[in-house]
Amino acid sequence: MAISRRKALQFSGVFVASTAVNGYSKTDNLKPPKSLKTNTTYDAPIPKAKGPRVVVVGGGWSGLSVAKYTKIFAPDADVVLVEQRHEFVSCPLSNLWLVDKIELEFLTHDYLQAARENNYTFFHATATGLNREKRVLETSNGDIAFDYLVFAPGIDYDYSRWTDDIAFETRLRQEYPAGFIPGSEHITIRNKVLNFKGGNFILTVPSGNYRCLPAPYERACVIADYFKQKKLKAKVILLDENNAITIKKKGFQSAFDELYKDYIEYYPNTKIQNIDLDNKVVETEFDEIDFEEAAFYPHIRGAKILERAGIAKDAKNMLEADINPLTYEVHGEKNIFVSGDSRPMGFSKSGNTSNSEGHHVAKLLAQKINKTKEVKWQPPTTTCFSAVSIAPERAIYIYTQYAYNKTDASFSFKSTSASEDWKKDGEVNANSIYNWANALYNDMFNK
Ligand SMILES: Cc1cc2nc3c(=O)[nH]c(=O)nc-3n(C[C@H](O)[C@H](O)[C@H](O)COP(=O)(O)OP(=O)(O)OC[C@H]3O[C@@H](n4cnc5c(N)ncnc54)[C@H](O)[C@@H]3O)c2cc1C
Image 1 (cartoon, protein in one colour):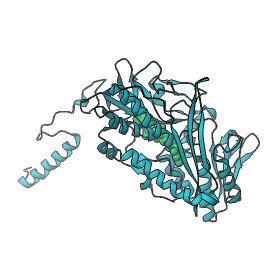
Image 2 (image 1 turned 90 degrees about the vertical axis):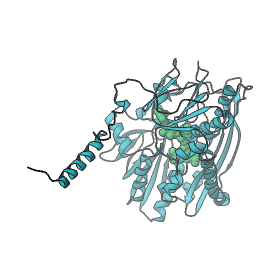
Image 3 (image 1 turned 135 degrees about the vertical axis):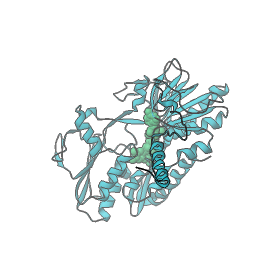
Image 4 (image 1 turned 180 degrees about the horizontal axis):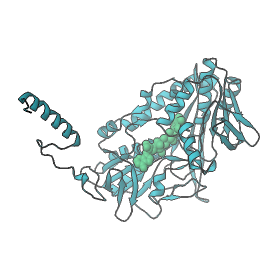
């Protein structure tokens, strides 16, 4: 059968389009991409370092400040930030988003902007391993040789104290996420809250130095307030493994008693013994509590990459970084550091603490790069606002610094001030939440 010229062109158009999808066409004569060669190792596709290369793993509150301030204190350094997420979503203030008080846009920030404005390279990849001898970080998108390496990867969950059944753990992670690592977990919890029709909503507080001590209590308050505004027949049941509220106790306790008497039931000193997900019942030593919805916050540990990189230690089952607490250097290494929530020191695992620590770690790096005189240990600072109500907006506040005790090589609180009277100072504190967040976002993402 003869084909007309018009048909032949149509046909060849389809041919070109369909082959272009596969990446090849006779007409453009493309060679297969190099990555299709069967290499077992390959270099990350980033420009050659123009100065001492500093690689930072983790673009959270600590890693972002390490990357920015290293470049400020040591302008010759070639800084690469390796982060597995595409965009930054803030955990601080996320409780307000769960109850529709603020927009997601307020929490979301642009890694590319941070890198552009602060003259470093953002490399989207997951760090998967470390070759210490060769000084190479292995990532999902290629290897990066470094002169200095900083791990700031935050935390992972540890469900092992509740279960060793991986299928059950997977159900907990998927159906009742904790919401202490940002992303889908928060979206799930938000949908649970906004669609709640009534009954019991369980939240839990783990023991140990868990991420953001006040956040579970803040979350209980704002969710209870949301239910109260909606006049739902609903209760937030807060099961706390600790003997009492772990921080800002006066402020939270008075909010529970005075604002949410009919909406929050607080159970201190409560260990969960069993969770029946099919019948939706939690068993504790003394009670059986049924629930319609829940967010189960398990114990935490240092992020798993520390273990894979061979720089984790098992301190009180927390598997945190094995570092010198004063120099932030990994034991036995002079050029590998850890900063932020995966540190083993008992500082508050907070964004403010991690950010201020990041500034200091950048100074330590700059001192090595610039070969200047030794930098003295500097305590991180914890400044933390927590909402206790959303209508009207009221908040409480704490500020803490730390001291190092040489005699027993331990840390303690050096100075602490708090403002927990939400009836008196709550409105001013509530405004300060936004000022604080804007200041810190500005510090991490702008020049
Ligand atoms: C609900 C909630 C409320 C909070 N409220 C406050 C508050 O009001 N004030 C406050 O100061 N703090 C608050 N915090 C605590 C604060 O979010 C954390 O302490 C802070 O995020 C810790 O910073 P970080 O840099 O150590 O870890 P993160 O911020 O978690 O950053 C770690 C980064 O490393 C990345 N990463 C991990 N592994 C890899 C890998 N292998 N490869 C590449 N990237 C990797 C992660 O994706 C992540 O972006 C709150 C936390 C929560 C959950």
